[in-house]
Image 1 (tube, helix red, strand yellow):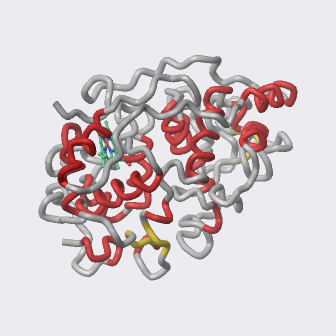
Image 2 (cartoon, rainbow, N blue to C red):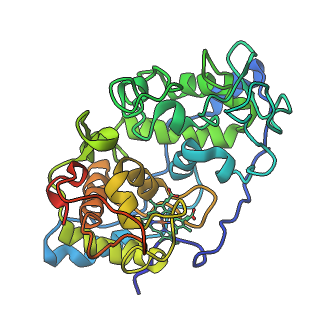
Length: 342
Ligand code: HEC
């Protein structure tokens, strides 16, 4: 039987991790840790390639039901979820409450300063200006920092940092040290992420940068004229996407994407038609702190990009994946779904 990837249907994810939590990492540990962070990965499980011909469909499906490799090295999917929301992924939503962004004082809870802040690279607490100390806010869902979707040319988020993580040429060791220690505007994530976490996170960044994992540039294009400033890329196949959806998503999200209400009002269809630049990331890495793990298990970054684009194209069909009752949807001619909008 074909099953999506999860441990037990729609139950909260197990949060057992190896290693210490919330380790406070000093420079000495940092360098030991850098040395321990090896760029070599475990090889992916042996699976057949997935050409799109009908004859190869069985092999194609085999890819989808191959369980992820057991932990033998960094877990890049978990790294992606930490990038998205480390508090949720580590089960720290209750113990670390970010300094509220609307107030003057530093008045959150938990963390190294006890007030919901993290320090920058020189040890000064960084107030929360709306980023909630999430990497996806500091660098965007497309990892391109100020050059990307959250940058000045596009969504104009005030807290976005200048580093483009996709064109960054630093080694894994250097990235690990930088993220652990922090920098100007960059929280010292070593204050809340342990060695395992940082290894996972850097594995995600390195594999994405090197094209071993899907990259956003082949899934959507940045476009100032479109709402939210993106348009889905050409080359998606909605037919194949529907097939993939049925295998990988429908068990949890329902045949029409309405089993769960997202952000109080959205169906999976409306979210995908209005914010695909976020949905691609969730499909690839999972939803932090929930049972939704990586759903796109194709071996190469290119094959993953194709699969993700196919599903996003399928989700552009408003009658097949409707809005929740009483909620609005994108209008005819909305550019985000490009020619896939139905
Ligand atoms: C094991 C069950 C499961 C499977 C399979 C699954 N999801 Fe999810 N998904 C969830 C759960 C649970 C959530 C969290 C809902 C919440 O936060 O309320 C979620 C959240 C999401 C979100 C994030 C919504 C947000 O809050 O931003 C997106 C997008 C998403 N899923 C898309 C997909 C797609 C596309 C697929 C198939 C490729 C898929 N999911 C497969 C269970 C699943």
